[in-house]
Length: 184
Image 1 (cartoon, rainbow, N blue to C red):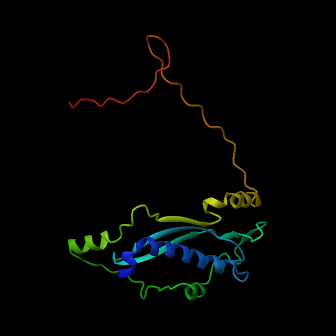
Image 2: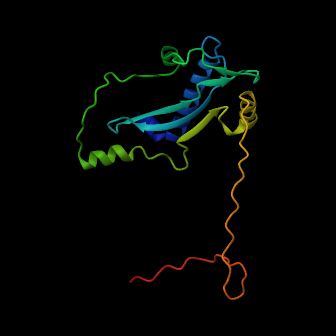
Image 3: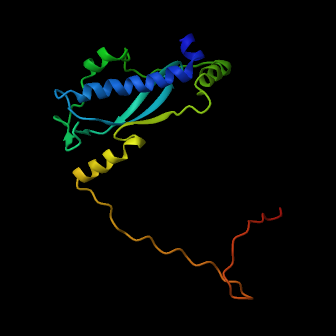
């Protein structure tokens, strides 16, 4: 973990890219889904006890876009997505040993040390999009909307309220700035 902490920018980027690629490779298999996923990844750097434990949580659509981009592929079984055993073999994964809740008391110094170790490098993005949710593939997103026969409802926006009129010249007033009230 010492090497990870001193090279966070590189390690976190690898953690994102490799975990997303792992899920995509498994989802590409016709045995499981046979389609491209759309994913949103969120980096967490701590566990329940605020101990340094970098990992990524994903929100993944329950369907995908076929490789020829001509079909929207639903899950084969709505109660089953991707096999955890296959994902675990492809990417270093460790399940919690017990599901029980525990209380942990730590000193103020220990709490601050545990908490501050999770401050990310300057400019690092904690949330990232992959697959057909990513920004560079807008055409795929439009294709998915077409496959789902989804249309934007054309509800007109209400017209903005007209600006108040000056009581002297009857011309529209312009907002210049807000003047704070003096203390009472």
